[in-house]
Length: 153
Image 1 (cartoon, rainbow, N blue to C red):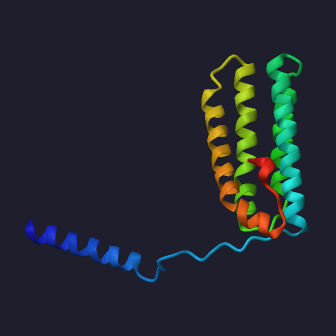
Image 2 (image 1 turned 135 degrees about the vertical axis):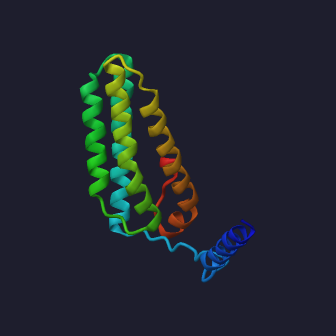
Image 3 (image 1 turned 90 degrees about the vertical axis):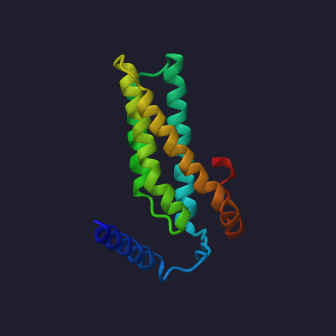
């Protein structure tokens, strides 16, 4: 039994050493860009956020149907997904934003059906918080490169 314990500890130690070898102590700094496609992505994202927000507010006020909000969320996800930013941080936003919009649409759909919308809304807000953190961390670099993301924070 003692031999088995020693062998397992040796394997774990060797695995830890191999896993940590070859890694530098600090990651390379992100090189932000602000090309035409980056600006277009930011504008598309800004417009889609405003549109989904507007439909969501109208729905809560009783002036829009749930199908309108769901359609706006799906369209927002499609528009953001088909954009092609080059900036690494904006590529992360592009990866997560469609899920954020679609989860919001699921929450509205659940609420309209009289079901509990809290899980989908929680996921939407959680993804939104992650996207916000990525943009907040990238803001100085993007601003220096010529892209203003302050309106999205």
